[in-house]
Length: 210
Image (cartoon, rainbow, N blue to C red; front, side, top):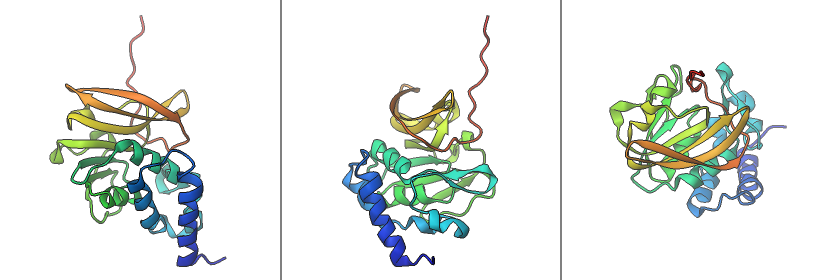
């Protein structure tokens, strides 16, 4: 079947109604952004028919796009305000960057070498766990995937009181988490178990056991 723009529009509406509204994505601004930004524009051509499924979409290099619900939950927890300076880790194809921009954020997006240019965002190519110190400090850290640990290098690029949304992975289980930075220390609370993409380069450091 050839998927037309009309088909995509219908699938986007169905995604909002069946995946988002039924699963704690209840911020009207997030709903409006995800209903208007064409996710299909951020999916590789050979996988566009998978655009609105509630599963990760494989990309090259072993990476994948998070399901729409994951992005919606992260955005809901982030409470993005117009003018927020956002550090986006794991920009991938630019979908989350487009949504953050639609919510009025000033986005600095970090992706490994070879990532695509992203309209409306400042793109920094390099290791995900290094962030983008040149644009610091940021009001919000948005990690678009699960990590074993949020590196001190990223926390150090945030303002005092900055919000953080991320996934955490513990013993193979991924969880949505959110928190704040206070006096240079990040406190995170688990929000919900949810299937999400695990980002490379964030293994927890080995600790000595006596």
